[in-house]
Image (cartoon, rainbow, N blue to C red; front, side, top):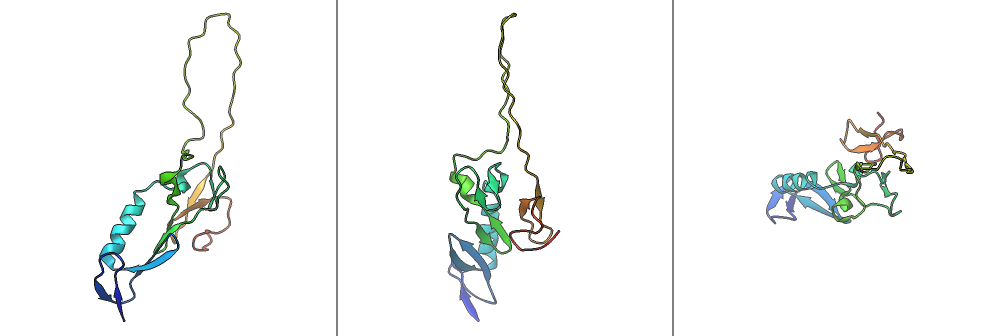
Length: 139
């Protein structure tokens, strides 16, 4: 069976490598597939954000659509998102306060989200889940 690469348009035989970006599934030759995968590995992902929870952004309430490259899913909406927050607590600022001044101290509670890397598909997912939401494997 012959296929045409969606990127370089070269004809090749074999099964090809599937890439699904924005709901469009396309077949790539090995060289172009490798380039696309490397490009997506460099992007900021929602999985690194404190608002990411099981393919949903807790800040906006929107369901996230992954770019699926082979067995890997990339939630790259973070590239264009103004809400990407990788650290739960802001940097503290030391202020010079005159002696005898009364001030209120505000303590923020830090939210810790622990991610587990699936041993099969290598995607990150929330520790509270009993199986990987990307491939269904159990730890």
